[in-house]
Amino acid sequence: MYGVKLFTLGILETNTYIVYDEETKDAVMIDPGDCNEELVKWVDREGLKLRYILATHGHIDHVYCVDRYRDVFKAEFAIHRDDVEILNYNNILAKIFGIEYREPEPDILLETEGMYRFGSIEIHIAHTPGHTPGSIVLYIPSMNTLFSGDTLFSGSVGATHFPGGSEEKLYRSLCKIFKLYPIDTEVLPGHGPRTTLRREYTSNIFVIHVFKYYCKEIPNTLPKT
Image (cartoon, rainbow, N blue to C red):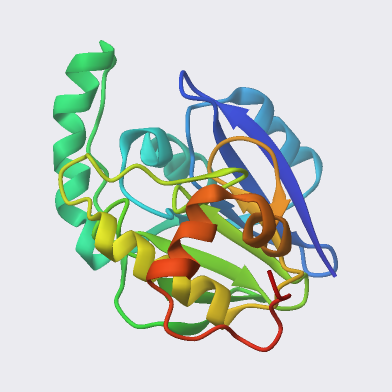
């Protein structure tokens, strides 16, 4: 059985998640938004083996503390190949925010969609460009839980005005998410409260718009509107 621990970190209140196997103690970190000693102490107290750091995309508020955690936990950093340039763009954002930034060098470049194993933790990864070229979502089948990064939020969707963003690609990615995963999937976004695909399908005006004008087919699992 897997567990999830949430830490909301940084000036943009990024949701940083620790997913862990309660039996083997293997763990992964998703979107390290800031350096946080309480997080480090919690991982140590729980006896977790945190060996992987996964980024749903490359914006600074999702990779800010990669190197610090990589050093502490002796972990490997994984990101989609198409967002490597975003890691460099963060130097501009760091100046805007007035913070120091050390561009992290990826250990693992994700390229293909499908099931991945990080220790004993099994995660399905789908490429969902739009917010950034290399945005991904992470789905854990055994938990029916989707880590949506900045692609889908409770009541909203990701911004597309940053370099590499594309409204058209974002809409296609939203169609893909609802096609790939069960309608009752729990969604843990990169910012804000958790939600479900069903709730967003029925109440998120952006998702409603996407299904009205962009999605060619509606999976049978979706309710009629």
